[in-house]
Amino acid sequence: MIEFVGCKAAIVLVALLQASQANPRYIREASEDPDYVTVTTQYGAVRGSNYNISDSHDLTVFLGVPYAQPPVGELRLAAPERVKPWRPDVHNATKHGAQCVQRVIRGEPVLEGVPFSEDCLFLDIYATR
Image (cartoon, rainbow, N blue to C red; front, top):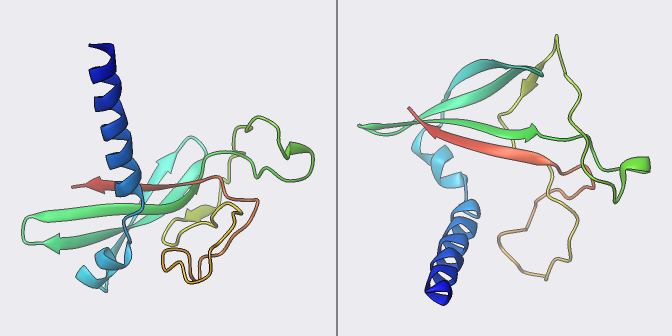
């Protein structure tokens, strides 16, 4: 029974990882002129995008939302520290944040043109409406 539960967990993990690699380009193609939405968090306001992807499905997207302080300088290789509030500014969450530095195999289409940085602790949030 333990092996079966572990197998199911591994399948779910792989499915989640695959879903996280979905290319947002397809969402952009569904609606080139998104509405913008601003929500207030304990750290400050965040501006995202609303997309109509079909007659019965709307999607709210927040891209590149920081969840921790950039792991640079003294914070390099340390546990993540809580992000500092950006109030009164509004964080523009309409573009992806940088990807963490990694080895890129030439010709890898998923990573071509993607900016890399040590400052890469960002979330992309997708919510249906």
